[in-house]
Every structure is written in structure tokens, then in C-alpha cells.
Length: 290
Ligand SMILES: *[C@@H]1O[C@H](CO)[C@@H](O)[C@H](O)[C@H]1NC(C)=O
Image (cartoon, rainbow, N blue to C red):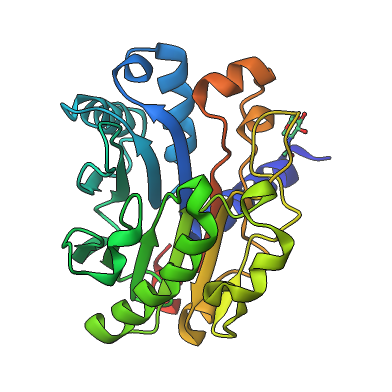
């Protein structure tokens, strides 16, 4: 292959990478001070997160909030071509075990216009969640759909069936409140294996209702360990406009064991979950400018 041709392919590849908008959901198993202090783990995390325009991160476990600040600082240093910022949920959980959901996003390409934490008020029908879902409304001038809502949730494994069904209600509430159909549910929903008996699916409205499109199928493996094969992490799209903006067949786990050339053991130090990700098409105007 000629050198010029190879160069052309590289250019084309860069163009293809840059011409979509990538959203991921990533359960970074127990992300706190210990991980933030581990150079190898942080090196892997910034490589993974810098691929995405918005990362919906779960299992942030750090009462002081310093771990997430360190991660942002490292990310901004690693990828100076963008400015990364974050939006954090409350510290969630009924007992002493708490965790946060956090949106990390490129503030030069997308902004947060509103957000909402569910399950806080005792009277709310959504107090039944072990950890209330966290919704954020985004605006981007470059995506084919400029306004969309991401609903991030880390389901309690034992309550996954009930919580998945409840998420349907949360979505309906968001559609009314923010007057939009463009909704994406994402996160570690524990929506697989023993947590969802086969007979339970039919009763889960998030699954049975035709307006919801499950982009990560039941046979997909979103776990790092070779011993498990489960589609715990999911991306579910609501709204024809948003569905139309999704790049066909782009939704998949990102196997960072393979991509970063790690052993299983090294990968498990980063997380026991792979991120699941999806690409949105860019607005025509943004494509021309690239
Ligand atoms: C991820 O990549 C590793 C290394 O190539 C491979 O052994 C493993 O089976 C892959 N896992 C999944 C879920 O595809």
C-alpha cells in the first residue's frame, strides 16, 4: 500500500471519528480516592473517557468529591483539545453506603440546560428507588438533535425488575415536565442474568412499550470478567427524532481490555464493567465545518 494512500486512510478515519457525537454510560466500580491515586487506573480511565462527548458515570464513591475533581483535571490535561466539565447527582443510597451518578461532558460542544434528581421527596412515587435516577437536559449546536435528555440510573440488583418498570414512569414525567420526546435511558441497569427472570420482562413497561428502543441487546456482554456474560449495562432510546439521530448499529460495549491491550487482571482494576456507548449524527452545518 502506498504511503500517500495510507495517509489518506488515516485522514478519513480521523474524519469518521470526528463526525459523530459519542455518548457512553460507564460504571467505574467504586470510583474513589484509591482509584484516583492509582496512576495506571487513571491512565486507562482518561483514555476511555476522552473518547466520549458525554460520559454518564456511575459508582462514584467519595464523600469529599476530590476523586472526581482529580479525574476532571487529568482528563483536561490528557485531552487539551476539549474542555471537560461535570454535573454531579446527590450522594444516593438509603443506608451509609452512598454513591453518585456524574455526567462528564465537553463543555465546548455541549451544555447542560436543566437537571433533576428523582426520589428525593418522601411523597414522590419514585421514592421506591434505592438510588434515585438522575436526569440532565443537554443542548448541543453540533448534534442532529440539538436538545435531548439523558436519564442515568444505577439499578439495585435485587430490585432491578421493579426499578426498570418504575423508570417508565420517570420517563413519562420528564416528557411532560420538559416538553420533549428526546430521551435516552442509560446506565448499569442490572438488566440481565438472575436479576431479571425471563418471565418478568413482559411486566416491565420500559421494555414492553413500543416507544422505547433497547439498543444494547440481551446477548451482549458488558462485563470485563471472562467468567461472566451479561448485558447489565444498557442504552434505551425514546422518541423518533432522537432514534433517527442515532448512528445505526453504533451502540455497543467498548472493550477496553482489547483496545488498551490489557490483561483481564489489569482491566478489572479499572472496572468490572465495560462502558456502553452510542453515536449521534451531527447536524449538517457542523459536518460542513469539520
Ligand atoms: C474483550 O477483549 C478481550 C481481549 O481481546 C477478550 O479476551 C474478551 O473476550 C473481550 N470481551 C468481550 C466481552 O468481548
